[in-house]
Image (tube, rainbow, N blue to C red; front, side):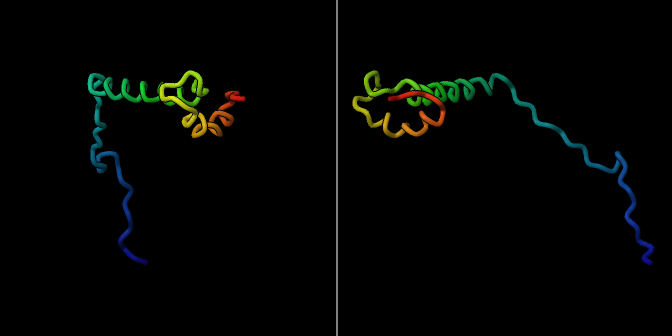
Length: 76
């Protein structure tokens, strides 16, 4: 047998791991941006029936039609 055996690592043998911190003031603009983007997506999926629509016509309604049914929104 080999004389070289793996010795168990103790807590002092492991390198120190430092967790990064995120300042809330840096996170707030991104949270606001993605919150507004999410609200816009929910508008187009849930409320856009073609009659009350930001762009005229029914193109967006047709693009999200299957997604509306998948999420349980009635559309016809």
